[in-house]
Amino acid sequence: MRGSGGSAGGLEVLYLHQHFSTPAGATGTRSFAMARALAARGHAVTVACGRYAGAETGLDGPFRSGRREGRVGAFRVVEFAVSCGNAQGLAARAGAFARYAARASALALSRPWDVVVASSTPLSVALPALAARRARGTPFVFEIRDPWPELPRAMRVGSPPLWFAMDRLADAACRNAAAVVALSEGMAETAAAHGADPSSVSVVPNGADLDLFGPQIVPWRPEAARPHEPLAVYAGAHGRANGLDLLLRAAALLRAEGAPLRLLLVGEGSEKPRLMAEAAAAGLANLSFLDPLPKPRLAALLAGSQIGVQCLAPVPEFAEWTAPNKLMDYLAAGLPVVAALGGRAARLLADGPCGIATPPGHAPALAGTLAALAASPARRAALGAAARAQAVRRWDRRLLAARFCGVVEGAAATPGAARVPA
Image 1 (cartoon, rainbow, N blue to C red):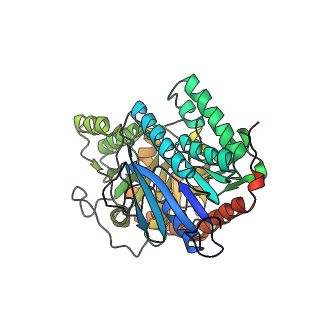
Image 2 (cartoon, rainbow, N blue to C red):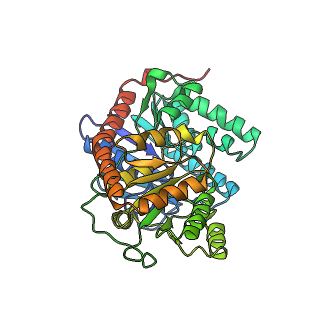
Image 3 (cartoon, rainbow, N blue to C red):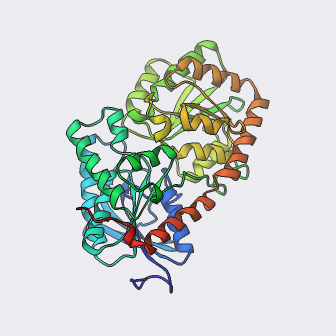
């Protein structure tokens, strides 16, 4: 250990994740779980983050010179006053990414860390790690949560010059990382395409929090849901990539059929105001919206629901290049899942089976599947039991965190594995 903040033999770890949140927030908690696991193994962990919409960092003191810091459980958090969220436009988010990268770079260069973890998205989080690699020889782990620029390019978000620049940054990150962590096999393939040594790439998927979600949670349902009305919940971002117009079309078909089912969309994003306005204009009384919920409250909602819904825009690349954490929440909660997706998600739901995949973008298939499950409590129970069993057997976040820690420790022990760019 080069620093002085850890126990004997521990590493000084800088964990860069702009969108970090504790379970008190309404967004993903993977970095919280991984940082906690690293700290439990005796490492001194500093998480550097920004102010992400829906996140709760665990800090509540004032910002001084654009930052605040403190202990959150067993690790330290440095939070920069850089606001970012899905409701912002592309330019505003790009500015937030650049400001965070600049502040995080100064932190990365401020001391001789043993290893840096750079968790993307955004892809710009690689810049501080590359700066520390070049200036100090600090090894880093590059974690790919969403492959950029592959996904923006597939959705035609941005422009060719921007995609070219992101390609070069992704190349530099993958080629110079001591190790790459990908959340799916498809993401691992993109890392190799950017020049990562295949032997340095590990797949560590999103995991299920079996303590936060599950049959032990007291159920809760919103007032809009009638007591005996099956409730199908989508909990996640409301952006272009999520393709939630499909759920509005499915709700219209379900209403026309008189299916006794309520669709509930929980979350926020740039598309939410439009979706709410269109649902109101169409008179979709069987569809409701909720603001983002803290994870414990979401766990209670899922415990009171009958179906988990996963939806993405019908972009072929999404089949293998995405790993939404909402799916793990549904499985841990023991909910049968209906996913308008192919590829990895469809294969996962076939295990058990614990859910049903419908063709991407096909509203009649989605509505028909939801109506059939709403009418069959026995089938819902069987699929839900298989979902919880799969979460316990394959996706326990504690086991996946141990694998993640092993990758980080291995990267710190073999700094020569990283390659300095020519």
